[in-house]
Image 1 (tube, one colour):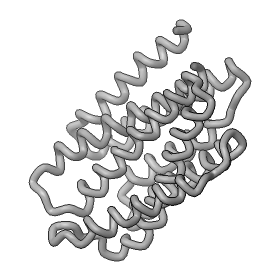
Image 2 (cartoon, helix red, strand yellow; image 1 turned 135 degrees about the vertical axis):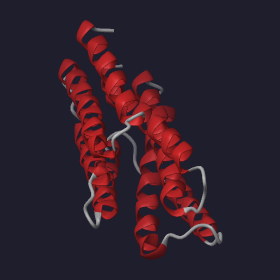
Image 3 (cartoon, one colour; image 1 turned 90 degrees about the vertical axis):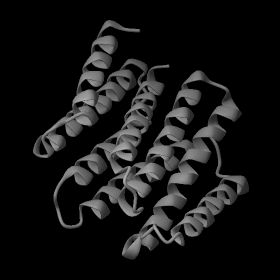
Image 4 (cartoon, one colour; image 1 turned 120 degrees about the horizontal axis):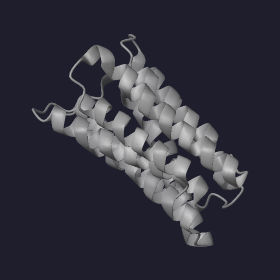
Length: 212
């Protein structure tokens, strides 16, 4: 690992810990934003090293989504989802140059939609007016995850393995986020902790995949 890359990893872990274990809700947005800026900076650093900026737009989309979700704006959830939606679309577009979208990718995405529709009928799950937005976002996210896995299976490169694992972690974090926001439970804090761990680990793996 490059010295600067190691320093950025230490900084990332520090900011991530502060974001996860924050005590003051008013400072949460600052810690989370600093963490997100760090994984974007990590991605840009490795992209510059390898002259390959293919994933930078996706990481910037993550950053925008993070900032929006952490704000107290009235429609912060929709704005945050929009940022992540943009990130997923950018990834699909970039990966299309490496692997064409197949029928299997669409089938997997449709299955995810059916699964979301199924759990949305649970009496403790209340998606409300976000339901259609969640369906659209879930479809695009599933397509991005499927394509990243497909790129690794097709090309077998370690960088694509890191990308696909990072995307799977990102997918899991969004699944947990849905339960954190819309499912009636006494374990929201535990869901939030698990969601953030999966998300920040996934984002960092995606950023580092450009340096693998």
